[in-house]
Image 1 (cartoon, one colour):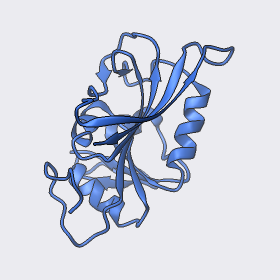
Image 2 (tube, one colour):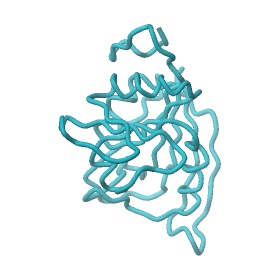
Image 3 (cartoon, one colour):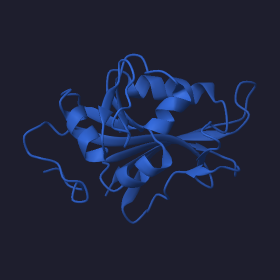
Length: 179
C-alpha cells in the first residue's frame, strides 16, 4: 500500500496512482467565498488545465456545481452523500476512498484532488504532492485550504509572477512534495 494512505482504507486490488492536490490559495489560505473563486488569474487556469489534462479530477459536489459542468478532457469524479445525485459525464463517489478507487480504475499516473475545502482537508493527509498557485494577497473567504505543514512537506519548486494587465495579484506556482 502506498505510504500516507493510513487514514483512508484502500483495497489492494486496484492501481493506486500518485495523489496530488491542486489549488490556488491566498496567503491566508482562502480559496473561495460563496462557492466562487476570489480572483481571475488566466495563467493559473492554463496551468490547472495543462496539469490535470487526461487525468482523474476528484471534487466535492459543491465544487462541481460551482463549475456547473464536467471539466473536458478529464475523468470527473464527484463526491457526494446524496444517494440520488447524478450528472452527465461524471463518475459519482460516496467518499474520498471510493473516489480514489474509481480514479485508480482509470490507470492514470496521477489523480488530482481539486476541492473544496473539506475534500482538501481529507486529501492532504494522503497526498504525495501539492501544486499550489500561491496568490500573494490576504483575502476574505469562507473556504480555506489546510495549512501546509513544513515538517511533512518540502517546497520542491517555485516560480514567481508579478501583477500585470491580466493578473490583479502577484502569484507563485509552487510544487510541494511529501518528505
